[in-house]
Length: 142
Image (cartoon, rainbow, N blue to C red; front, top):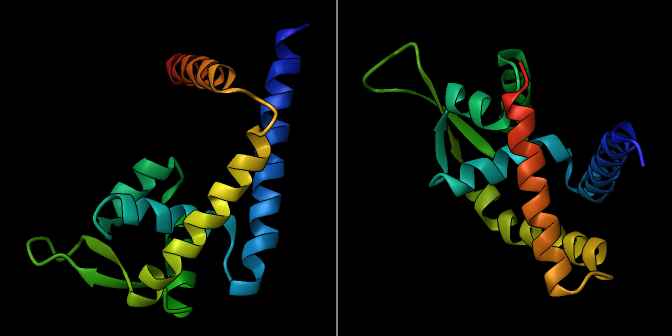
């Protein structure tokens, strides 16, 4: 097995998860990227600055701006100006997003279960451990 085959397989899995997510969320007028932003907000108390979202999602400023604008237009988030720094935009999840989050978590959980159903608990733990190592090494590459 060659190392580039592992990289290809990781990329292929990522693409498939994104495609399944996009297909599933299309009915709600959302994309997988928008759902990731909503998860990020939810995991941080429902409120984050635009800059924090950029860092957490590891995407460029224009990408976050586009995601936030579309989510605001569809009623999933609200944009507020930081009281202490008028240049800073704070993104807040809306009631609509809070109502939808259980459904989103369930869909993601179902996908995870199906994706890993042929692995026993030890194999899942080992996979997780190995992926954490790979992720850490990627962060170290300049």
